[in-house]
Length: 172
Image (cartoon, rainbow, N blue to C red; front, top):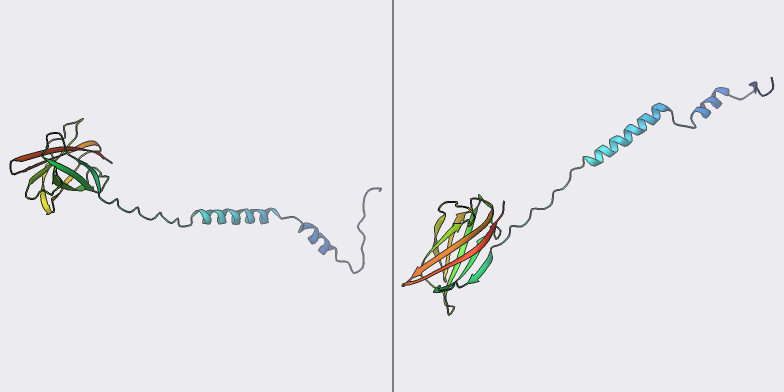
């Protein structure tokens, strides 16, 4: 028959080896499946690698919010808070510096702070600030909600009175 090849026996030639060589030229379905599974396992392991978390953010240091003398106030007041960006429901440390209008520190004053949310009545939230030396007074309070607040500081000594309002944005 023309076009049909008849296998011939060639002495010294191993025909089974020739068939195996022909088959091994491409990957068998089982080998392909195993290779695909191995590739997927490597990708999965790479995705499961322990991710290093970012280092913790350093805590913001206390910052002076403002130094001001309210009209008619007998004192110049500065307010610093720690943390500088307060969050509701967490204790905030307050430090008020109280000075005469000429700049000398005021000692022995009775100083109070009131935390007021101007857009909503949050009830009475005031506390005394204790003398810390050199015209500074310190105390702690807590904002009960996120949003815009006013810290109203009043000071009295030797018949002089001062009152200053500081605006604070409290975070969540």
